[in-house]
Amino acid sequence: MALSHDPLWPRAGSWPAFDGSRSDVALIGVPTHLSSLSPTGADATPAAVREALRRFSPTLVSGEAVDLDTALRIVDAGDVADPDGPDGEKRVRARVRELAASTGLVVALGGDNSLTYPVAQGALAGGLITLDAHYDLRDGASNGSPVRRLVDDGLDGRRIVQIGISDFANSAAYARRALSYGITVITVDEVRRRGIDDVVAQAVEVSGTGPVHLDIDVDVCDRSVAPGCPASVPGGLAAWELRALVRRIATAGQVASADIAEVDATADAPDGRTVRLAALCVLELLAGYAGRGA
Image (cartoon, rainbow, N blue to C red; front, side, top):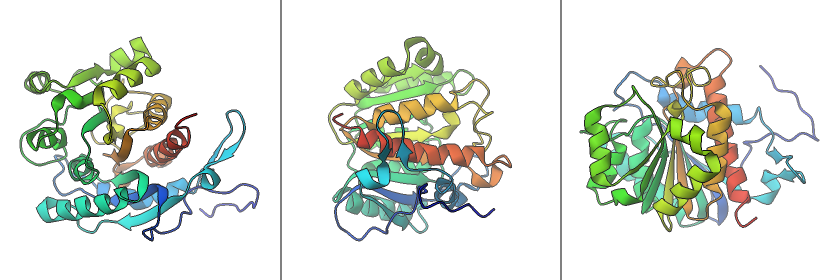
């Protein structure tokens, strides 16, 4: 459907291509999908999120109105071709490292959750915060294993915080593995009991000084708002809770990279609600970055 045009109502997402110059935020597509534990069309999601961004304004209206396109220099670095497998992961690391050298925040659009492994490494992350219903500590190389692979490659588990871990979505063996690694686990029920500000304060403290990577696995949300996530379940976070967590975490100066994962654009509801939520997570990252030091 064609979108209306109003010169006084700019649309998000019309960002210039990355040209190597300094930027505040750089977007990059990482359409991983081949190692997914369940069939997925997540490789179609980066393009779908870019399209969905056009449905939103880049303007914050809480307090004095702020146009993020004016406040920040935002660029789009396109997609990494064939990002799956060892060779694809090398390309992802190299491209993210290039972007990280000239930008304040790299935002990677997945793709399944396997992208977290090379994106975090490309950004030289020494700490990790995940918003996810799952531990992602499985053996092997898949969308269920990026956190374990990062630990195996030297990331200190004591600097990992996992927010939103859910009952009936994990196994006792992987819960014990998280404990053995020293990972800080904050369940979805604990988020609601403690509140977002308290949880984020702990996550920022535990993940340590930068660079820190933020993994946004949208299946942490309730299935009613994320039907396009194969592993989302009833009882997950509300859309507003995810958005609030993303913005608050992105405000932390040590967060240098983020990914948005596990959305299958080809399996979304007819109204595109999951992809639109992913697009809003992009905008919340921008809002958080713009709010640093405020």
